[in-house]
Length: 341
Image (cartoon, rainbow, N blue to C red; front, side, top):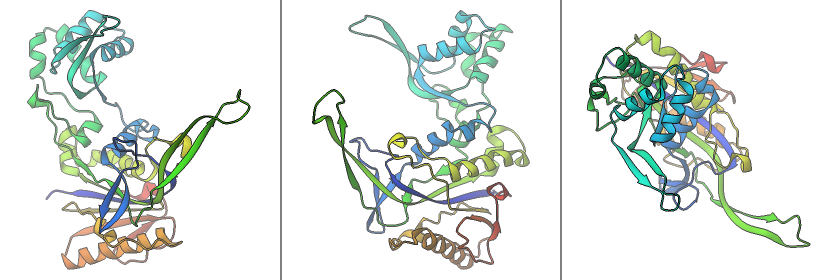
């Protein structure tokens, strides 16, 4: 039977604007008939992937790009033991189609892949070694590569090499505030130090604040399959994601708002199915001075109701800085590192 680790985090951010839409405005969503602030799953996953916490706990990161020339330069710098021409030959035959464009002003040629794809120095090094051992360049497309951890978690779709496609072991929801969100506008000026009076520039920024519900589900069996290791060996990866979910926030506008907050509450459950608790907030939490505590209580009550009503086989542990949880169905832990199964 498949095992899922469900991660639920409640994190409070003061004034911030960590995720914008195509117009530069605060991302929002309507849920339960009211407008909520939103941080997209793509935004959160990239923030986790780029965080120092994540980098310190995985062996190798993937490099997601469609820039051929920049990737070639990076490989030449990081794989000095190989000839640059051999590296270029391998990149040209890794799978993705390469197109060339010419800058109208400089007339310089620039090569790029036809899609943004995850590459890794480890896989490229392995391909170079295989070519030097006698593998034909044209056969590189047939080679199935062991994915990096973030590819094993988030998946990969490569139309050029269907054999390398990876089904994502982790599903991540868009984060929403547990309550109705008021989108506010910050009017700002950039003062000209050399002018006697007035501003050199004026502008506006949208921002909001609130308690966000984050949710992710990890298919443990699929993760083990993707990384070709035992289920026991996935524990470190899962613990890393739990830690990142509790501590990592997107970097956008952080120099302006500094909303570097950690989660007040993290609930992890182990069960035979994914289980979102977002509907605990379908009715928005009253926007009082105890939004976090009320959000935790609503989340826990919804979890208990689902477990009882659907007779779910689920184990739960919670890390609670507010000391709000009082449930016989949830084991409380005092440290985030204890949230493991």
